[in-house]
Amino acid sequence: MSRISDFTGKSAVENVKEALRRAREIEEYHALLSLTEERALDRAREIDDQIRKGENPGVLAGVPFVVKDNFLAFGAPTTAASKMLENFNAPLQATAVEKLEVEGAICIGKANLDAFAHGGSTENSAFGPTKNAADKTRVAGGSSGGSAVVTALDVVPFALGTDTGGSIRQPASFNGVVGVKPTYGAVSRYGVVAMASSTDTIGCFATNADDANLVMEIMAGRDDKDMTTLPDFWQHQSGFTKKKIGLVKQCMTDDVDAAVRRKTLDYAEKLKQLGYDVEEVDLSMMRHSLAMYYIIVPAEISSNLARYDGVRYGHRAAEVKTLAELYGRSRNEGFTTENKRRIMIGSFVLSSGFFDAYYMQAQKARTLLINEFKQLFAEYDALLMPVAPTPAFKLGENTNDPIKMYLADIMTVPASLAGLPAISVPAGSNDEGLPIGVQLIGDYQSDSNLLKLASEVEAA
Image (cartoon, rainbow, N blue to C red; front, side, top):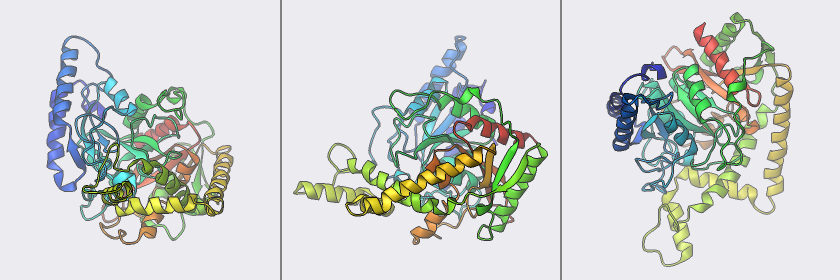
């Protein structure tokens, strides 16, 4: 699989043309919603000119990449895979995209996702589902499924995604690539379509841990346009010292696919060979995490999506006669079924009479989960667990059962609720050749150490 180093030192124009060629070859996977060909080639020519003049365009000079289509980026509409924003052209670029471009990287396209990032399979896109890189009859995972697939199929060496409750880690696992969800606030969310403001994070997909570490280090750091961002902490990590890893026992029950459990235990053995003690640990609040998540996150979604009313930007219904009809029809036509479901759940739990009973209780439970993580990290460097209970499921298998779809997030939402860094790393395949990933979760701001640990395992 491609590494960033395969592209550096080469003609930027040739790199971009090759990436665009590969992108067109995989159209049947429906991983990309648009290509930014004209702008990408213009930037590539500029970078080649800089190199000819002896200038330094940056550490990613001429390296092509793809962004999930909820990042504001020039060269193509930013749709968030929704009819609501189908023709929206961004007036600015996301901070994460800008930082990568400063280092010479070139965006060549916008990847498919679940509309407004609401989903776990990329089947909720208003423009059709994305197919799994290893098996076209199965889901790519979501919501960042398109970004995972273009990375797995070697269109680009890395791609950007967002992770609110597992939206990078789960598709990374399903497609056999590395996926990074950083510490909350590590990377600016400015210029990215909001889903749930207290758990949204900006991360990446790559084919190896070292490339992911490089991309994340470039994107990380303080941004005055996003007051939740943290000062840069990426460079100041020298590795784990306790040499102890906790294997979360709640994720190793008979309810979890046998191949997933086996690959997780295999990864634990590799950690032991590197000198780490691996011990079973108890994360008892995990059993409540999904209930917390699907109260807190829809509440934030209902607030964040209130801005899409057909007035200033986005889809506007035709031939309306009243303001109420404008709001109602524009939102009905622009949002998918899953968008509407989450708006309704969120509006309900925030409503008078239910706010204390649901939303406040979920936030209290969230604090208990955070405290339980803190206790574990006082003793362990990192936690090990599967990313999802199963490998990629069949297209259409869970589309009519939202509860079953939500249950696929059971292992990824705890780290999101606590704001912890978590990465998905490939751990092999099952007997059908479907990729399986395992998840490493670290304490706050231990992101680079997690990736260094994953790199150690890769090298071993």
